Image 1: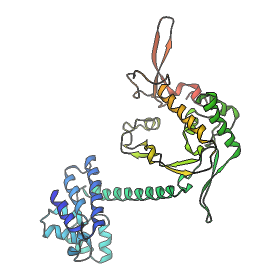
Image 2: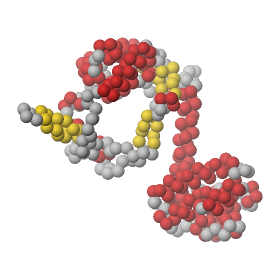
Image 3: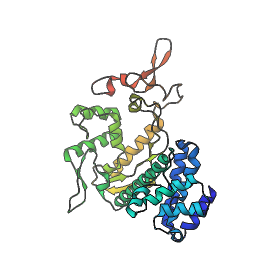
Image 4: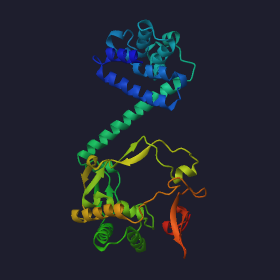
Length: 358
């Protein structure tokens, strides 16, 4: 493997640095494929071919101008590479289609026929995954640049209290305050900051008013109120990039359980550090002081709330209801002589759901 890196770097790093960077990116994708085990005993050949697949672009090796063929011939004749490796390099991506356009299809088939084993499948898929990652990264950088320039377009939607006005040929997108909703938002922040109302109290208050949520529901969940109280857009600073997807392993949720997935998808969403957030100016509904006091109370509640688990329970985060898919939580009941702890399904609590228990 070391020799492959040396050859690719020697031929590409100086003359074609962007092509060398591309080869390194594909090699990184190959390492990911190796970890999955789908390549079996061909994983080493897969990784080597990933490093060398574009070596035919090197100016001194470009005989036909068709880099898969030039690269494979160089590896076969000058480096003594084995047949499996050269056939992988010669047939990567859409080599056959390009060879047909160049009138080199028969030459390619004669010298480097397609592999008959299954190694070609993960090899081709590796390129697709790499290109997908590249497109996603370019898309992310483009949105980040627009966010830094103060464009609301990257947000694509607005929270309760605002209306998202789409961009037109003459102007960009912007947030427009919805007055009757903004009054409720300001009152909600005031009650939480000044009157000591709980999040559950605020959810009941909003539900009692009969005002639908942003998604059209008649019942306000506590999680929705909690998210609104944390949203800096209400203080005039909408944020882009608060979260990011990582390759960690998330816990199984209700959807995953009902779909019968024993192992969750290897992607989870986590919060970015606050210093990495990109703020976009929008009309404020609450003043900065009120928002700061609300934020402080939320942090205090998280730290000092009596509901915080002091002693983890045996099945915490593990047990789930086979009927509805919701997780179990530990609760307690007191008799005349002692306190009894037991597990209860989240779906069995009437107060959590608009139509009662699941």
